[in-house]
Every structure is written in structure tokens, then in C-alpha cells.
Amino acid sequence: MSDLTKFTIAEAREKLKGGEFTASELTEAYLTAIDAANASFNAYVEVTHDHAREMAKASDEKLVKGEAGALEGIPLGIKDLYATRGVHTQACSHVLDRFLPHYESTVTANLWADGAVMLGKLNMDEFAMGSSNETSYYGPVLNPWKSRGSNAELVPGGSSGGSAASVAAHLCAGATATDTGGSIRQPAAFTGTVGIKPTYGRCSRWGIVAFASSLDQAGPIARDVRDAAIMLKSMASVDDRDTTSVDVPVPDYEAAIGKSVKGMKIGIPKEYRVDGMPEEIDALWKKGAEWFRDAGAELVDISLPHTKYALPAYYIVAPAEASSNLARYDGVRYGLRQEGSDIIDMYEKTRAAGFGAEVKRRVMIGTYVLSAGYYDAYYLRAQKVRTLIKRDFEQAFAAGVDAILTPATPSAAFGIADQAMAADPVKMYLNDVFTVTVNMAGLPGIAVPAGLDGQGLPLGLQLIGRPFDEETLFQTAHVIEQAAGRFEPDRWW
Image (cartoon, rainbow, N blue to C red; front, side, top):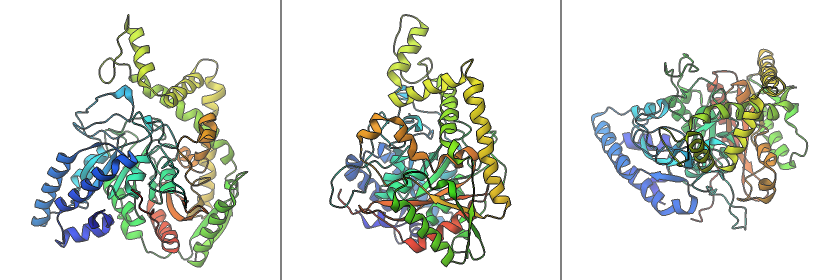
């Protein structure tokens, strides 16, 4: 690994401005690392060598002129869900075969405007449907972490597995990701990285392939809390092209890092102590609470009584919206087309060949719960539950709680092709048990590395905040980071 790839975004930013190395040299270091290691991880599905070099050259010219943007010359990986003009954008699905958009997503356009360099497109679960990055048309991503004394291949989490793995393995300085039910926070926890899912409406969804439109939100995965703050500042914006984008000022998130949490109230929800929770997850949660107490915060026991309904309600709402959103992939205008005897036959053959098993499963579930006779019993009831979940959080924050501390995942990373997970999709869905409530309520949540399990694998804690109060999440997340330290995998690649 080149020494240049070891720097965080914050460190690289200062060294670039100080002239210690150029953006071209930094980009070349990352491209070399990707070319050497991507075969081991399958994190990138497309590496944009020439494009990256051109962008880095333009950054060098701006740096010399003193016109550097907030991310000038910083090499990033982009999840394959984001439209990138003229560059592979397939949501890692066969149904979007050879699709090259003629437009740029708002979030990536914001990053390029701030000087960031695109290294390529990152692997992910197909249409962001998965918790392990095993549903991708391009095959699974491998986690850079391995259990102590074992060579077994582990999942990086999903759906943003390529983003998390590439950040953990230093194949990019930071990465874009998306979170519909935990797809930023769960892979961050599995890879010892930091991932924040901002408030719904904080980042534009325009140009991001839709999974479940009322739940999807863009966010970054980075090596530490400061880097996540730097990235989110550039990613967030109001956008007239996304009617769910909210026109609220984007603060300087980085300025919140290091501020005292003395006097803050940190909520501990009793409902997150789920049946069968591993002892080491519970112990880590208690340790996190002690870190806040030591930092001067007050711990408050709270109740979020409708938490137990969140997962089943989520797996009604999300597939229903997916069923609607994915109806557009029919082989007529773009992507894969399988010829048929008539247009209906063509639709059916294209979708049968283009969608993977998990996407088909969720589309079928979604179509069922939206169908006549079942809409009221399932979809409408799930939306009512969603309102109750949101109200639980509102009442907790109204009572003076500043942030809520929970585990990020129910376990550390599990094995690729885990038989128990493969045999029972519900076991896979249970990986989202601590994260889906945040999406259902539209709140911001951040996952921070907090320790290692008995096998030496990273475990994360989650902080949940008030709407559009990501500043407090960065402030409190830094407390965990300072107490726990940073974690990196032993290099085996």
C-alpha cells in the first residue's frame, strides 16, 4: 500500500494545500492500490482510470491557483446507485445492462463542484436490496476484516458493501453510499468505518436509482467521524428536482467535532434489548453509555414502545415502494432486452432474466401488499405503525433527549454464503433490527466503530438524532471515537 493512501480526507486535504504531494500523485496511489487489490475484494465494478487522472489534473491546477474547493483532489469511490454522466450506472443489476446516463446525480455533482476525484463505481446489493452485498449481479464483496486465526471470507454488510470495504481497505479516501433500512450504518459497523444516514431530505435523491422513495437517503462512509462530516457538508443541499429535498441551511459539521457533551442527555431505549442479543453486543452498549457518562453526559432510560413493529412494517413499506419503482425496468427504452413473441412476453422475459432472486422476492411481496383486498390489511396498517414509530421518537426528543444510543448491528460480520442466512431470508432481514426505525421516522443516524468482538471483528454503536441535527451526531460520535480508538484490519491482500 502506498503511504499516500493512509491519510484521512482531513489529513490529505491539508497536505495537498501545503504542496506535500499533488492530487495526481494521490489519485495515482489509489488507482495503483485498486489495480493491485480489487480482485481480492470485488469492491469496484468499474474503475475510471482516465477520468480520475483528468479530474486530478484539474484539481492540481486549482490548488496551484489557490482556488481549492472543500474536497479538492480527494479521490472518492461512488456507489453504483448514483448516476454518473457517461459512466457505468447499473445499481449492480443485469436489468440495467450497459446503461450509461446522460446526467449526473445532484450529490455527485456537488462533490465534483467541490473538487473531489472519482475513482470508479462501487459494488452493492442489487437495487440496494440486501444486508450482505451478496445479491449483486457482479458477485459478492469481501470484507477486508477476517476473524482471528481464520481465512474464512466474511461479508462487508449491505447494501453499501463496496463502499464500506473500499474505505476500510484504503481503496478510496471516502465513498458515497445510500441507506434505506440500514445500508450505510450496517456495513460501516461490519468494516470498522464510520457511516451516517442523514435526515430524510438533507441530501437530494435526484439521479440516485430509487429503491423505496420515502426511505432512501444518501450519505457518506468514511474512515473517521471528521471525514464523514467533511463529506456530508459537500453532499447535502436543497434541490428543486427532488420535491422531498428540504431547504434548511447546511452547517459546518466539522466545527461540531470536539465540542463538550457535558450536560447532554443520551437516551437508552429499553426496547433495543432484543431477545437473543449476544452478550458482547450488550456489553459494548453498556461501555458506550459509560463513555458518555465519563464525558459528562446524563444517561436517560427511554421507551420507544413501537420498536418491535418496525421491522415487519419496514418489510411491507419498502417492498411496496420497490414494486412501484421497479416497474419502469421493462426493456423498452434502456438496459437489458429479451426478445418475446409480443410486448407482454418481452416484458416478462426481460424482467425474469434481468432481476435477481432477492429483487424478485421483494417485488412480489410489494405487489401482493398493494393488491386489492390486501392494501388495507398490510400497506395501510404498516403506514399507521410508521406514524407511531415516528411519534415515539418525537416524544423522547420533546422530553429533552439530545441523542439516542443503541447497538448498530446484532452481531459482527458473518460468512459469505452463510447457510443459515441463505436458507431463511428473514434471518438476513433481522440484521436491520436496530437500523430500520431511523428510516421509518426519517431521522439521522450514525454508526461508529466502538470495539472488537471475541474473534477480533469490529462492532459499532449507533447514535440517533433529532431531524436535521446531524451536528449533534458528529459531536457525540466523536466521544465514542475518542474513547474506543480507530480500528483497521490486518493487511492480508
